[in-house]
Image 1 (cartoon, one colour):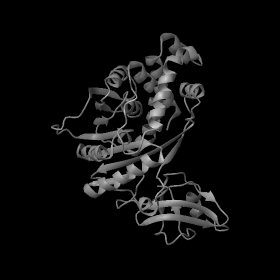
Image 2: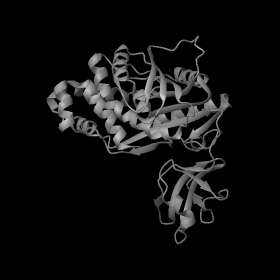
Image 3: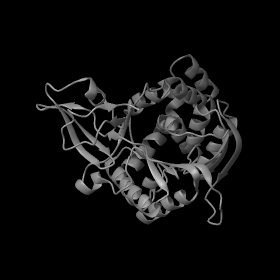
Image 4: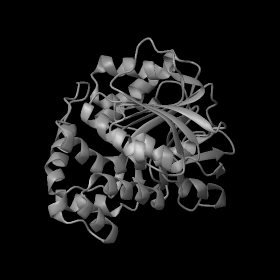
Length: 363
C-alpha cells in the first residue's frame, strides 16, 4: 500500500472538511487543537459506540448531525480507505469502466480509495441510511480528482428490492457488524445476488474477535448457498472454516502496517487513541472465479524451543507447521519469512506438522 496514496486522500479530506485556516495549517505543518476541537468529542463518542456495541445486535447510529458526520469522515475515512487500498491489488478488471456498489458507504470511503488506486472510469452507487453522511459523501466524491474518473455517482438511502442491477464490484465495509443477526445474513445474500458474473464481493469488518467470528460464520453460509462464488482472500478453500470448527475463540484477521498520515496521527495524540497499526478482517469472493492454489500463513512465524512455527490454511490443510531447529534451508525460507495472509505455493501436500521436506515459494 502506497504511503503517497494514503497521504493524498488525507490531504483532500483536510482541504475539504477543515476551515480554510485549518487546511492551510495542514499543508504547512500541524493543525492546531483549536481548529480540531469541534471534532474531538464526536470522534470519541463514535469510537465508544462501536466499542460497546454487542455482536449480533443493531447499532444505533452515532452520527447525530452534520458535524458528527464530518468528524467521522475526518478521522475514520483514512483508516478504512487504508484497508481497501491494501486489498485492491487482489482485484483485476479488464474493462475500462466498472460499476461499483458500496453498501453502507459512509462518507464515500470506498469511492475515494478506488478513484485513488484505479485508473478506471467508475460508475459508483453509494447506499447510506444517514442523511448527514450522504451529504458528506456527495461533497467529498463530487469534487475529488485523482487517477480514476467518476463517470456516474448515485447516492441513496436504501437499495430497491425491485432492482435487477448487477455490479462488477460490491463492497460492504464495517456494515455487517452494525446489523442484527437476521439482517446481517440477509444483507450478505443480497450482496451476493447483486454481484455480476466475474465480479467481486468484498466484505471488511473491524479487527475485533467476536465481529470477525460472526463474519467467518457468514462466509460459511454464503459459500454453502452460492456454489458459483470462489473465495480468493484470505481463504483458499470453500468448505466450512476449520478454525471455527476447531476453536471457540480463534479469529482470522490481519494487521496493516502503515506510515500513519500526519493528521490522523495528530488526532490520535489528542484523543489518546492508537492507530499506528490497523487490525482488520475481511473476505474477497469472485462470482465464477477460481480459488488460487497454495496455503496462507495465518500467524507470524514464531521461534519456539522446537523451531519455527506458523499456522497455515489451504485446501485440505489447516494447522501449525514447523521448521525444526537445524532444518532451516532455502526451500523453506519463504515460510520462515512469511507475513500474515501471504500466499505460498508448496511442492507437495503437507503431511502432519513437519515442513522440512516441503519447498515453499511465493507466486
